[in-house]
Image (cartoon, rainbow, N blue to C red; front, side, top):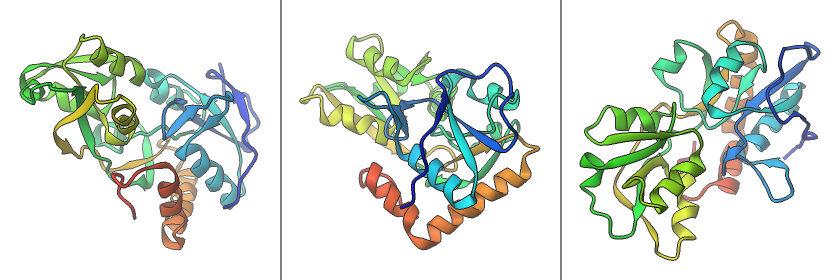
Length: 243
């Protein structure tokens, strides 16, 4: 697979869109493995980083990555602080009222509840459930009968489960799997998986039709030639669907 040079032009959101217009700036959270995260060498890595670089290489674009907190990632796209969001963002009707999405580059991912081992499954309906704020999972809990407790970052939701602040967390199953596997039996999945959203796609401003179509064309090309599934195989376990 072709690679482009990873350029982190800023580790925080730029104050204005002052970069050259021929540079496409991609906003990501940098805190949600395996989608996007900072590794032990302080490098931005993950499925979406590899995919974004490949899209830029195939489309002949010069791209730079911008790290932005999840809570303000859509407002800062709309404000022009970057041009694309690639941050594990599910395609939803509500978000599509504000921004526009490319075709999905991940199928709808299972969301799962994770709790301390031995937790009764009834907490899903009657307990306190953690979710990262402004996520599809937070919306699911809010629409149910459990009490929602939102946190700014995904790591905080895990800590809330471990310290007993909440009964369980609802998040992407692929994000939770490493925590369960590495917990020596402390953590486990409970209840049934659910599938909110229409898969994960790249978000752009509603006026950026050409950029959206360019990203969509490359993603569809990668679906057709098998390289997208190969990238999914590299970063996700068998719980993630393939195209």
